[in-house]
Image 1 (cartoon, rainbow, N blue to C red):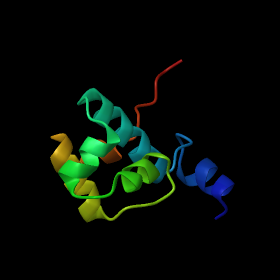
Image 2 (image 1 turned 120 degrees about the vertical axis):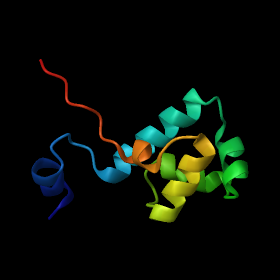
Image 3 (image 1 turned 90 degrees about the vertical axis):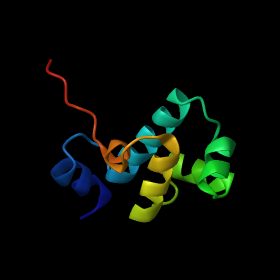
Image 4 (image 1 turned 90 degrees about the horizontal axis):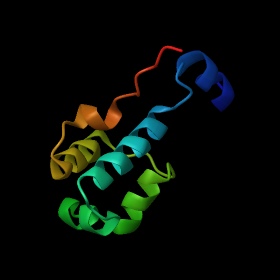
Length: 88
């Protein structure tokens, strides 16, 4: 599939899983009052990697999802949860 086909056929919310992860990572990090640098330090990764994840430049391993979730005090699934569709 092309990206456009993927989004229209397989991703009914219009967001790829990488976009979902990036949005949730940033939202939860900000809710916890953490800077990218602080999150990176606690997760023992480089700040530029956190920035790249939030900008959807890189995909990460499931192990990294779990490590970031642990530092953020949430379940890994919280970082991968798609937004609920709202009725119009």
